[in-house]
Image (cartoon, rainbow, N blue to C red; front, side, top):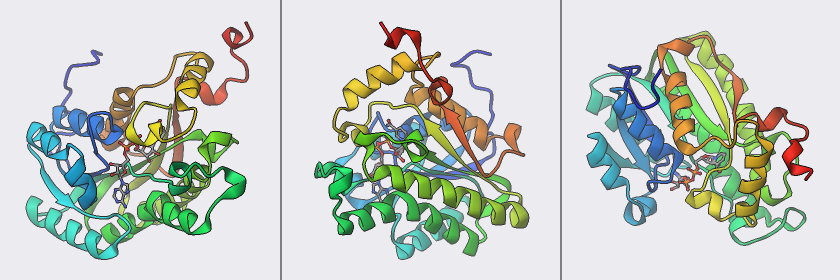
Length: 270
Ligand SMILES: NC(=O)c1ccc[n+]([C@@H]2O[C@H](COP(=O)([O-])OP(=O)(O)OC[C@H]3O[C@@H](n4cnc5c(N)ncnc54)[C@H](O)[C@@H]3O)[C@@H](O)[C@H]2O)c1
């Protein structure tokens, strides 16, 4: 199977992609690959990110429309879903949540010194937004049967990574929403809900984490296959949107070159 070839895996499928900011964003890579696999989709991000980021460039490249929405606002989400269903003239098949933000990390507040107002805001953006997106889709009856909903997480949800601050807690919550809402979606609509636990990759969000560069190198050494890139992540997510993974749901799926199951890599001992 060639890496670059298109397999029409998403032919006829429609969706919404949250979180493409610039060409480094994981959501950007997912949009590029989804387009290649013949999907149609709506791109969305906050009004501020639409102004500062490069989403219009992606929109042109992928022949998709852009609708602004703050994913913490039920009002914005209602409008986004209404416009999307109207645009496609019917239901959609996939949703990507590729959203995260920690004000505590941005302000360099270490875990023992968290500011609780920042904590609440970061949790709303990085975790509760996943529930809100799914609740809006649920209420609008927006998803086709055997659709697929994916969010992106990191292993700091399961183990202690000091530099990851309160984002660790948001990711644990995100994974919990996946299990709990996944049950309801499965029973009612046969829709899958999963998280992909991705290797570190250089994006705008990742760069705000102190010591990220050193950690990237460490992670590369600790992963038998090496770090998975954002493009690798996009390829994996496309399979989760496709019909080839219809019975995978309520899972946290590691996509990290083996990092999560490696105790020691010999190269780190030298
Ligand atoms: N880059 C990594 O190393 C890495 C590793 C594992 C998981 N992840 C996760 O991947 C996802 C995508 O992050 P990325 O690394 O591509 O960084 P990114 O900065 O490119 O993307 C984050 C996006 O979240 C959007 N966002 C922030 N607040 C929002 C809001 N209120 N409503 C809607 N959108 C909002 C931003 O505008 C941005 O587009 C995040 O969930 C992140 O935690 C990243």
